[in-house]
Length: 290
Image (cartoon, one colour):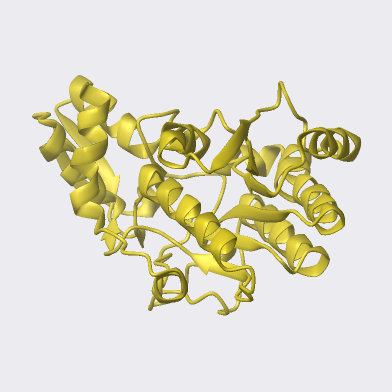
């Protein structure tokens, strides 16, 4: 049976993959987090993959605190770069196919049209720089890999923008949200389904050669203000959202002003039908309410 190791499985994406396992009876899933497997330790990963005979490794583990990374560079480097180097070396040696989750933050955010996979990268934050370093390790050490850059991830699990907006919308009459940062929300449930469809495709096509970087978010474009407004409407909060600019919210890390990802490649290669971001918020909110 095909064995899939999911690291960082207590986070948003790992939790969504766990919810979908019954739909993929042909796969054996192994879910780990730091308590079960420290991916910054090469020896630990070696022992683990030898014991469990892993075929695919979905790496959901990362240091994702964008502002925190500015002050905790070493931790971000360990999780986002060194750990991925370990995964790349192990995968190349044991013929495992790694699926790495990366970010829109590898781009400068100064663009004006959706970023393609081969567009120039120029991260402006420690988070983006360390994630790009991880991407490069995979590319250099283990060419037979899939890297998926995504953006604005949300789900019923963990901490994320959608859940924060719901909480604040209950507590306040008015919220000010930036409208000069543009991108696309990604429902982690949709990304999880797409990753498992990709693995199923790889299993059915042993001659697959289109390895490398792909972009995935939900379809459409919006600002954080648009996203927040839609959340309040769908959830039913009476809170009003008002637009403001990034200068009103000083943060340690520089945020990209434009980080829309072009999904044409992943749609074409894997035949994915990606839903629009507006239609997926209600699905997530209904799960939270229930």
